[in-house]
Each structure stands twice: as structure tokens, then as C-alpha cells.
Length: 145
Image 1 (spheres, helix red, strand yellow):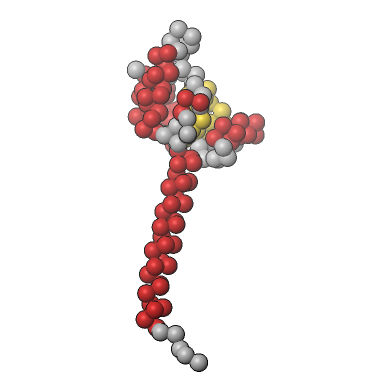
Image 2 (cartoon, rainbow, N blue to C red; image 1 turned 180 degrees about the vertical axis):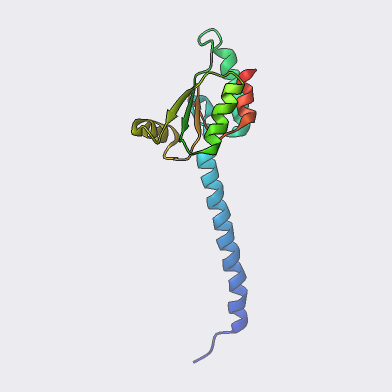
């Protein structure tokens, strides 16, 4: 019986490692896109942070006559530092908002999870139907303009 050539085996290992790394990067990219972007921001849903500022500003301009103020819902937990920073920031900027503690009310948790497609991290902000994940002062600044 003939023994396999060891040099061929050693050439395959870097190829397998490279393909595995490429697959991991692709999977990570798909997950990031799933949680931080929506195919159509005008239809509501998740918005990429880079597009959120423009979307919020355009919505605010087009809705000024309909809704004099932005409707902001903040889903939080009591122990979350980013939730506290979000609430403090909104208060500082005098942006009216409603707090929904997902820890204290299961209805709020179900509501939040249905809006974001299964994501369970906090804070989650619902700004006129646009969903933003986490504390992002740059996007929140657009509400004050």
C-alpha cells in the first residue's frame, strides 16, 4: 500500500484554516447586518446608525405638522448603565420619552422583542417607529435639531 505524500497534507491545512476564517467573517457580517440594519428604513424596523440621523431628521421635518414632538420609547432594565445614560441624555436634551422596564413588565419585553426581531439587549429606542439599539448620542442629537 502506498503512503500519502505528507507535503500534500501540509498544503491543505492552510487552505482549511483560510476557508474557516473566511466563513467566520462572513457569518459575523451577516449577523451585524441582521441586528444593525434593515432592508428598507422607510418601512420601519432596524436602522443602521449611519442612516438613522438622516432618517430621523427627514421624518421630523415631514411630520412637524402632524406630530409636534417625536415619540420616543426607551426599553430598559434597572441595572443597565447604558440605559441610565440614555435616560439621562434624553432628560438633558429635554426630549420627551416613555420608559418601559422590560425586567418589571413581561408585556414590555414581548413588545420590545417583537419590534427588534428577537434581540434582547437594552437599551432599545423606538423613535417614531424607527428602532435604535444601544446608546448612541450622535443619533439622539439629531432629535434636538
